[in-house]
Image (cartoon, rainbow, N blue to C red; front, side):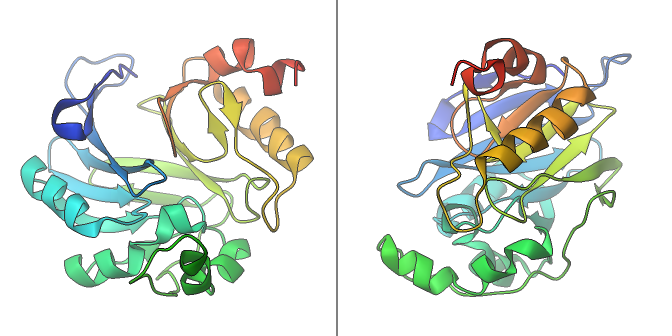
Length: 238
């Protein structure tokens, strides 16, 4: 995957993604940092059909809607990586605005989606709502947007129901807060487990290959190979 980032108009535009054997664009993406958490709400689309999904609308829904309009794509689904407030705070509002289904995360995060209002109050986030997705996801399932198919990997540890979306053709994954550039997701929240998180990364993500590039829930993306070699949580330095 050829992925580069820039910061025009406060959003980060990802270069179009291609598979290893073709130069024609397969997909495009724009990252919209939302809320005080600077969470990477990601709009990803099939380059040919312009059919799109929104990953993790954590809040600032008007900002997300403006980015969708500017990008001129047709959002058909909302995909969630996990249930923490900074990733789902705007999900119900965006679903109502776009009239599209919410898909994911794994059902183990139901307790988080049942308490979005309570979580939001702890961080001064008003207007959020508890909700249930239209479809829970499980290990081995697939989701699709346009001609793009993503395999679902259940990767608990940061939260019990965290999932990763992986596209083999594009050599690309959206990992939510499972893995970061130089770090890993925090595990001191309810249902978190550091040992489980590291196992999820080492047993499910790294075996996919060093060339897999990823977008994560906060900050810049990276590749599995870069993290395998340099991430202190994976090299044993931390």
